Image (cartoon, rainbow, N blue to C red; front, side, top):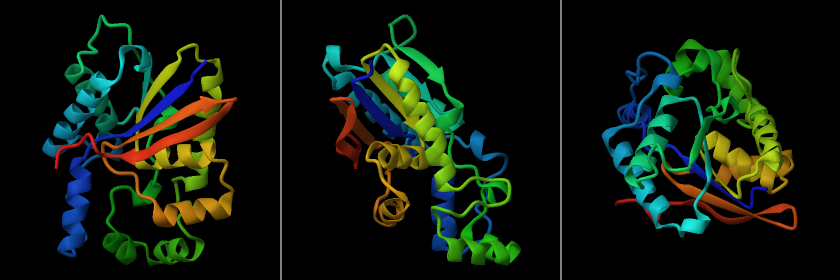
Length: 229
């Protein structure tokens, strides 16, 4: 049975950089082509992933995760691959990697890879509805609300009851890590709204839960002490 669960957000992506620059210079177009699932890590994101690998290697041998689950998105896959290479947990070492669709980032439908400025101009009615409903409940056309992400995250966590490994590593996204906290902490919808208003899951951060008497106890959340300045 799983006793320790570590959740990692992927390293900085090229979209993270592009959206920050678009906001800084008030641009509508962030210049990110293709699909969100195909967005890669930035150069600094790869550096962060290597730092995560060194953190992983620093764990006592009997405390390291035995199984790693990753989001199917490219930036999450790159993060885990670099982590394992840096920590020497390479193929041939008994650490199993599994892809789980439930760990994907929040799907934003017609708003995918659009900046807030672009959404306001192209879909003003959606921008207004999003503002009125709030981020927890808002579901864009073709996309998901954060409650939808919480439901699939809960499904994943429930399935860990049948996982024989004692330690599990998850590499996903800010939405999935945040919803892990919501599910493990047993938050209702009101508490989830409050959590999302005050908590940010940092790139390449580590969150840790330990199972005690059948319940997940949060040991740390979104820690970045292992990362370079």
